[in-house]
Image 1: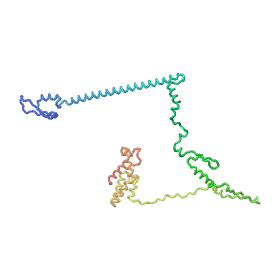
Image 2: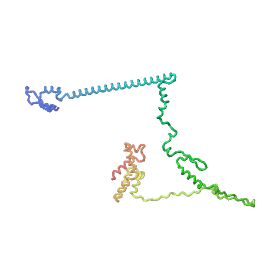
Image 3: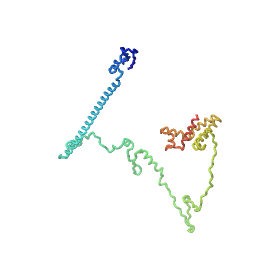
Image 4: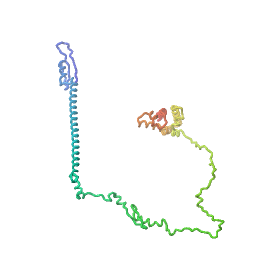
Length: 343
């Protein structure tokens, strides 16, 4: 409720000051200070006392919530108690059953009546009529029954083989060609040794066998020394490398050779790009593309990707266990500074 207070300007003792009060329904009413104080405590207007109403509402809501919680706790306790009673009841029933079974062994037959009924039902043939018994071929699969049956086949000279996968026709065909592969034993001829008559004993018999010469190694002298050739330096092929090729194959070692620190090295690289730009802008563009494909720039990209994936600073990547390259932090900053100047 909005309240505008307008006091009359008259200072007479008979005229009381009044104020203009706007109610919640939108009506504006002029009343004295005494009437306004009475209206504060009434429930028809919402000038003051709103905080008290809110507090009473909160207290009522707290009471309702407390009652609900107490009712839920009571129901949970009832459910727990019911579960305990059911468990105790089940245990007692199982104990009673076990005592009954044990007491049944005191009969003449030594078996309780319930067990006797079960045995009689099992002995009855009518109960087993619908059950399929386990046969000797039940362990085989359909594939074994269809394709892998063991069939004894009578072949040459009364030998038996087990044709599991090979058809019978192929077995006979192979046996028919057996003689063609090996050959007929009757056709084999052996050379008989020849003896010379009237041979002089003093001369003896000289036997020459050319096949033995390849088997026996030749004797070598024991004191031979290996022949050493003169040591010659390797041939170094000189290759001409252009400025663009130099940027394409630029490594971290090449970067360190240019200066004593990272700032000197990066200034030398900038001079190379400036020379390329003065000679030809197209060569300058090719040099920039080659720089982005160089090994040093690839190391720079790998460090950035590791930092982003693991969410750690670049300094920890370079100094920690994940550092795969020897690049230092100042060198990384120098490469970053050069990349900002290029397009």
